[in-house]
Length: 186
Image (cartoon, rainbow, N blue to C red; front, side):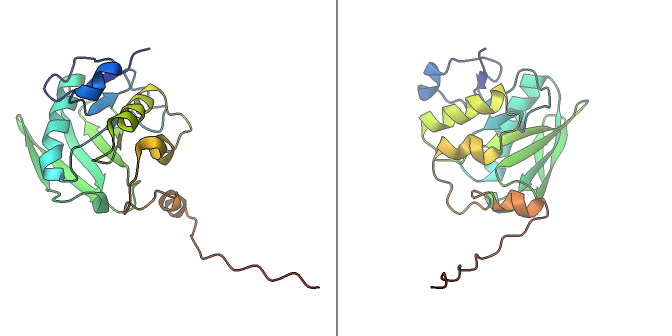
C-alpha cells in the first residue's frame, strides 16, 4: 500500500517515500479516511506561525478532497500568530484555538463530511523521522497515541503533553509529584 505524500504545489500527486527526502512534501492523508484511527494523516509545517502555514494546508486539503475546509481547530500554546480567520477561495475559514486539546493535533471541519484530525509534526524535525511519522499517520493508527507516532520524530521541547500528561489530565486524571518511599524498617 502506498501512502500519498502531498506537496503544496502539487497536492494530488503521490510521491514515493524515497523521493520525499528531497521534495517539499508536508501533508499525508489516509486514502480511506475511515475515521477508525487516532488520526487521519499528518502535516509537517515549516514554522509555528499559524497565519503563515494554515493557508497552504487549507488549499492542499481542499484540492485533495475536493471539498472546502470550513474551520480549523488547534492547540493554542503550540502556535504563534493565530488569526481568527484565514482567507480561502470564496470563503473565510474560521480558526479556533483550545488548551484542552491534544497539543500535536489539528482538526479540520470539512463541508459534507466528518472532521479530519491531523498529527502535527514539529517544524525542524529531520526528514527521516518526519517521513516515518507522515507515513505511519496515514496508514493506520487504531490504538496509537499521537505521542507514539512522534516518538521517533525528534525533540519537541516545550510542547506540553510529550510525556502523556496532557492526555491523562484531559481524561480526568491528575499528575502529582511522587511521594518518596519510606526506608524499610530494619
